Image (cartoon, rainbow, N blue to C red; front, top):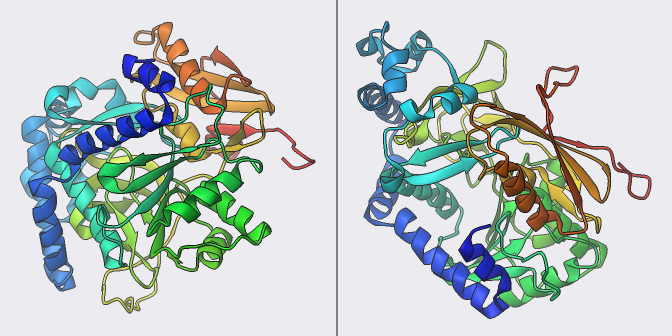
Amino acid sequence: MGLLEKIYDKSPIFFQNMMVSISGYQRNKERYGKVYCEYLKFLSEFDKLNLKEQLDFQHKELVNFIKFAVDNSKFYRDLYKDIDINSIHNINDLKKLPIVDKEMLRENIKDVVTLSQKEAVEGHTGGTTGKSLVVLFSQEDMMKRMAILDHFKRRVGFEHRKMKRATFNGKHIIPPTQRKKVFWRYNVACKQMIYSSFHLTEENMKYYVESLNEFKPDAIDGFFMSMCDIAGYIERHNIKLKFKPVAIFPTSETLTKSGRELLERVFKCKVYDQYASSEGAPFITECANQTLHMELVSGVFEHFEKDNSEVLVTSFTTHGTPLIRYRIGDAVICDKTSESCNCGNELTTVKEIQGRRLDFLYTAEGAKINGGNVANLFKNMPNALIRAQTIQEKVDEITINLEVDQNLYKPEYDDLLKDEFMHKFGEATNIIINHVNEIPRERSGKFRMIKNNVKINGVM
């Protein structure tokens, strides 16, 4: 635990709100500068282009990005040494290049990156496999990514930083020793109330709803299952809401039809889904008609094999840690119908995003910690972690199996991980860490980061 986190944990709530806001203003400098503002204007103009013009832009960006990677990344320069890069003109030509996966990047990360940590914005990913990876973004990349995300929201009526938002995420905002029923902190910099998604028990949810009714957010975003838990509580107890959001924007987990219907029924607004990743994958976003579209300006999606829904991504906003034909491990199903969306977007639409999981673990008190939050617990682990799996057989005990790089992993990393889990699950949960040679896959060939075998009230 760092010094600032120790100070935060021991501070009164009003001072914690100040620290959250100060951190928010610091992030604003990284995310919402001149490049962000200029790119927002560009995106509005890009939407007005016809499909051919958009595809031409995408192809030019692709060629420029590959050349950048070869010129600046030793890893890609060596990987493509026997390939004529000048023969890459469009998406079809990408097949000439080899596929890259997370383990390749992790093992060669020093040769992959094009920036020093001092001049970069650092990103972490735990992913659905639990394999950690630290990636670097240029500040320009980060601002462009924020602009794409905010432009998506602006299309459906929400103006970021001008309107209020409630966010359910995995931030360290509630100290493990806190007794007060205040499970949220306010970020003044973004007009954002951040709600802990680690304390959503039946007993606590009334406090969340009271806070939402007082705050009256214009939008709600964050972990899908956390928002569904709140919506279910509101509906079960027939609670009257004193606000009506413009929209709801779920992240990190697979959106289900029943969950979308629940959220829209309770909050009386539309839910708009989107896909990206901590590594910096291109964006897929929903239009006002709730149809998923690939954001051509952000990169390229390819299918791994013919008739296979798993995708390879090439992202134009990853200059610090280039992603080219990267096997991200997510599945995307395209809509093969020839009809274009009523919103005017002529590109083939996306039928379904299958990459994210709905698995969860319990706290000792019975609150659900969803898959997105569990994955986040591995984000700050060094690149020495290859793969992780969490197993829960008892409600107050979690076993973590780690597959690590023996040459890089240090014993103190176990303490770091235990501390991360303790902050989320509380002191009542026993955390057991095992180092294993290999974490086996399921009979289906899939890897499960979470295996929950706990039965509560007869339900598992």
